[in-house]
Length: 313
Length: 118
Image (cartoon, rainbow over all chains, first blue to last red; front, side):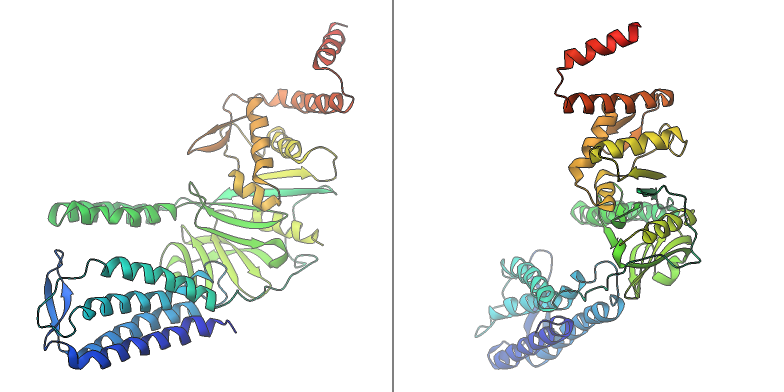
C-alpha cells in the first residue's frame, strides 16, 4: 500500500521515533557533556547534556521533516512539476540528520574522551539521505492518474487557421528576466565577499547555486500535437511537460512573481514558470492543476493549443 | 513562431519538418537569425524521435538554410536565400522519386542537365 501519507508522514515519523529511542536508550552510557557540534577542523566546540539530546534531535528532525512533509502534501498537491520527487524530501532529511547525530554520538558511548567528528559521519549521512529520498519517493507510490481528455477546446477560445490534415508546432521563449539577472549579480558579489572574508572554498560552494539560478532564467516553450513543454534554455532542464490529452484549456492570463514567492519554476498549489510578472500562458490540466508560464504574447500559443485540442482524438 | 507540418503526406517525417521550416520562411513567420526550437523540445512536442528532428536540422544545414552552433542552438542562416527555398523542396521530391525508381545518381544528374539545356 504505497501512498503519499506512507512516504512523507508515516515512514519519517517511525524513523524519528527510532532515532529518539536510540538517544533515550544510550543516555545513561554517555558522558555528562556530549559533543554535538564540531568546527571546520573536526574539533568539538559545542556540547549538550545526554538528557536533552533526545529532545533536541527529536525536535530538529520533527521540525525539518514536518516542513518537508507540508511542502510535499500541501504546496506540491496538484503540482504539474516535481510532484513526485518532493515526496522523498521528508524521509531524506530525517535520515540525514539522524545519521549525523547517531554516528557522532556512538563514538562517545562508555568513554569520557572528547572525540573528533568521525570521518565517516558526513559521507554516511549523505548516503543515507540519498537512500532515504529514494525510499520516500518509492513508498509514496506513483502520482495519481491524470484523466485523459479528447475533443475540442472550450468554444470561446481563439483558434489559428490550419489546413485539414496539417498539424502545427508553436515555439517561443519566456521573456528575458531582469530580476534574476540582479539575483545572479548579487550571488557573485556574495561569493567574492565570502572568498575574501572566509575562504575561496566557501565561495566555490556558491557556484552550484549560481548555476541553478542561471538555469532558471530563460525557458523555451514548445507546444505541438504531443503537448506543451517548458524547458530551461541551455541545459534543457528544469523541464515541465503537459501532454495534449491532459489539457482541458489553454488561455492568455497573468502571473505574479510575488504570489509564488519569486522567479523560476515555482510550486505553490499551482505551478508557475516565472521570468517576469505580467502576461502568461495559463494551461489547466484535466485534474484541475494549473500551469502558468511567463509569456509576452500568450494569445498566439493559446490559439495554437486550442486548434490542436480541436483535432485530438 | 509557428511551424505547420503536413501529416497526411507520404514524405518521411524529417522532410516534413524541413518543409515546415521552409514554409515558415517563405510566409515570413520565420526570418534570418531566428532561433529554431531546441531539437529535444520540438521532438517531444511533435511526438517524434529526437533523431528525426536532428536529421531535419542537418538536412536544412546542408542546404545552408540553418546553422547549428554548440551553445547557441539552431538558427536560420543570416544568408538564407528565401527565393531559393522552393527549389530545395522540388529537389527533395526529385531525390525521393529517383530513389523509389532505383535510378543511379549519375542518370538523374544527366537528365536534369539535359532538361536544363533545353
